[in-house]
Length: 207
Image (spheres, rainbow, N blue to C red):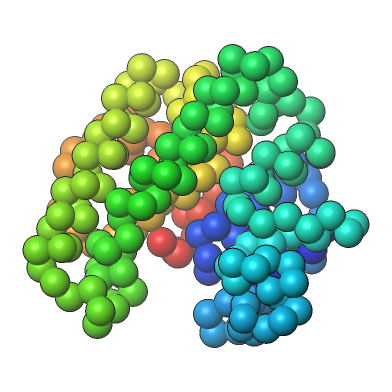
């Protein structure tokens, strides 16, 4: 059976849990990370020297990096619906997954830590304003894309890209500040809410 290492409050662990729900994969999960077993323990570092969650062990195949895990699970257990085999269709899914990880994921950090986690180390008003402004700019990119597709981020159909992007959208709406009007993003949020996996691991009260 697939084993997932990481606490379910982690947005990156929730990516993997949502993917398992979409793909019908049975798994067991162990709590590691903040508030649980330390990822600095030798047993964990042997799996991931970066000391970060999630990590999976699939019958002896150990893998870390959440988006890489998503791609593996969809390739190993999927039928091609979430992660198409055709190079151009797959590249479009990869593009938005990589955008979420490299651009969108990076910009919200200060605002999220300040406004949701209430971190004392993130109390600088100028940095907070800059983070919100940067985050809003990338969400405008998503707004334009969703206006084009009228549905999901990679096109007409739900794909693997909607898992990381959808959790990012959930974090956007779950962080308390004055949000600019993004009607296509709001429609997308409600569209995702039709999926059981999103309700269980995305729009479940956790940002």
